[in-house]
Amino acid sequence: MGERLRRHVRSEDTLARIGGDEFAILIDGVRDIPELIADRLRVALRDPFPVHGSSLRVRASMGLVRSGGEGGLQTPDDLLRQADISMYAGKRLGKDTAVVYQPSAGVRAEFPAALREAQGGVPDGFALAYQPVVHLPDQTPAALEALARWTAPNGILIAPETFVAVAEASGLGATLDAMVLGLACREVKDAGLDVDIHVNVGAARLGNPTFEEQVHRTFDECGMEPSRLVLEITETVPIVDLADAAAQIERFKALGIRIALDDFGAGYNSLTYLHALPVDIVKLDRSLAVGADPERDLALYRSVIGLCTDLGMDVVAEGIETQLQADTVYAAGCAFAQGHLFGKPVAISELTRGWHEPSGQIGGGGREVNQPTNQPT
Ligand code: C2E
Ligand code: CA
Ligand code: CA
Image 1 (cartoon, rainbow, N blue to C red):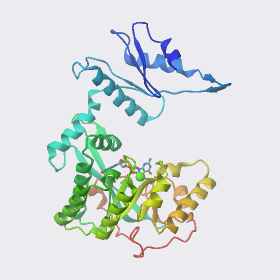
Image 2 (tube, helix red, strand yellow):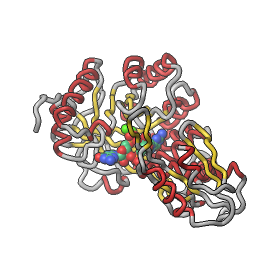
Image 3 (tube, protein in one colour):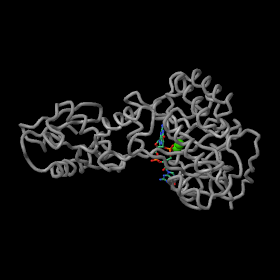
Image 4 (tube, protein in one colour):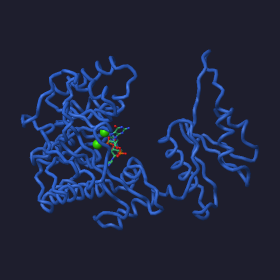
C-alpha cells in the first residue's frame, strides 16, 4: 500500500503510516482540489495486489481536509482529527469514499457544548423520534423505542451513532441517556399514550450509581411506572465487569424495569453477554435480517430465537423491511419485530393519530403475551 501510494504523491509531500491500516498524506502547497487528489489515489489502488500467489483488492475510505479553511488556521492535530471525522463520515456512506471536511462536521466540539449548556435540559436542535415495536403477526404496537435526533447549529442532521459516540467520548454518555429518558417519559405521558417505552443506554451506564439515581428521579418527576420502561443496553464500549453489570441489571429489574440486550449478533461478545447478563429481552441486530438466502436466514433465526426462548428471554427482530422478512422471523418463533415495514421513527405527534392500544408486553415473563404458533402468516 505504502509503495503504491508513494508513486502518487510528490517528493515534497509527506506520506505516513499512522496505524495498522491507516495512512496520512500531507500535500504541501496549493495544488489540485482535494477531490481530484482523492480520485487519483482511488484509481491507484484499484489494481489488485498480488499476495502469496493470490490477488487482493483494497478499498480505502478517505477523509480530506484543507488547512486554513473556514475554521481558521488549524494545528497539525486539528487537521488529523478533522480528516478522521471526514473519513468516518465516509465510512457511514459505504466503502471506497472520499469525504471533504466541512466545519459543520465539528460535532465533536458542538454536541458536548450543547449538552453542557442545556444543564440537564434538552439541548437546542435535539428531539426524539419514536418507532413502534410490534407484536407479530397482527402487527399491533407493543412498545415505542425512543431514538435521539440532533440537528447541529448549521442545520445539518447528525447521525445518532455520531453524536452518541461523541457524547460517550466526552464523558457525557450518562448525561445524554438521562436526558433522553426524562424527555421520552414526558413526551409519551403528554401525548396520553399508554404504552411501554424503550430507551437506549450505553453499556457503560451499568455500574454507574449516578445513572441509577437519575432513573429514580425521572420516575418521581414524571410519575411513570417502572414497569413501563425497557432499557436497551447498547454495546458502545465492551462490558468489562460482567458480574458488576449483571448486579446492576438485577437492581433495575427489582424496580420493575425490563432490560433488553440491543444489537444481538452484531457485537463480538454477544454469546458471552447472553450467558452472563440476566436480560428480559434480546433484540436481534438488523444485519441478521438481510441474508441472501431465506432458507439459511430461517435456520439462523430459528436457532438464535430458540436459544433465547430457552433462556426465558423474549426476542425482537430488528430492521424488518419486507413481509418476507416478517414471515421468516415469525416462522422462526419470534413474537415481536421492529422495522420500516411497520413504521419508521417519527415525532410523537405523528404517532397519536390512528394509535391502537398495545396488545401485550415484551419480556414480561408470564405477563400476558400471545405466543407465536411457529406458522408463517
Ligand atoms: P438501534 O438502537 O439499533 O436503533 C435502531 C436503528 O435502526 C435506528 O437508527 C432506526 O432508525 C433504524 N431502523 C429501524 N428500522 C429499520 C429498518 O427497517 N431498516 C433500516 N435500515 N433501519 C431501521 P437510528 O435512529 O439512526 O439510531 C442508530 C443507533 O443510535 C441506535 O441503534 C442506537 O444504538 C443509537 N441511539 C439512538 N438514540 C439513542 C439514545 O437516545 N441513546 C443512546 N445511548 N443511543 C442511541
Ligand atoms: Ca435500540
Ligand atoms: Ca439495535
